[in-house]
Image 1 (cartoon, rainbow, N blue to C red):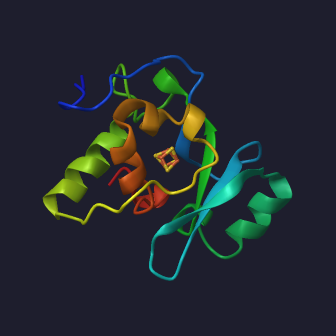
Image 2: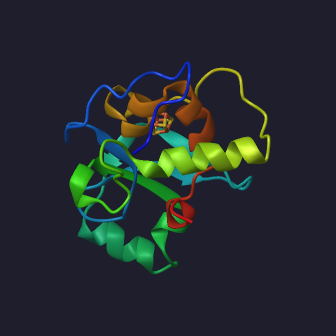
Image 3: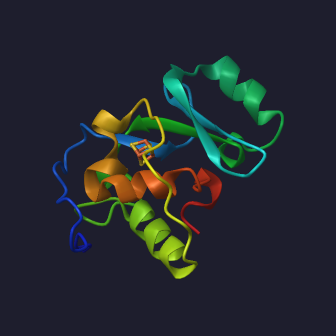
Length: 141
Ligand code: SF4
């Protein structure tokens, strides 16, 4: 059962009306960002819906989740990362980044899903500062 840290906004929605920013590459998801040469995710200006053809093509070069990020509806209780009232992924990511003392960037990355993002809903700007370091294939590690 996670508890928001001091100074971090309370979770405003436990329903399925939020968007998962670290979804699998599946038809119906949207392409959220692409990993750059520096290993960080560059968010697209507009999330791009993907179809089966995109998925098949992307998989030919290896797991797409290792070099791109995808978004889809947050599955809440249907997801193994759901802790009961929040997503456990971003909490673990933030704990890990705190332990390695990563510098905080100025401003937030532009993001096409911030209005509904589960991670932003839970932890606000801290999630966005961490977000560009997240690779979905490693997110639950
Ligand atoms: S954590 Fe922030 S930057 Fe990342 S997807 Fe959510 S709103 Fe966008």
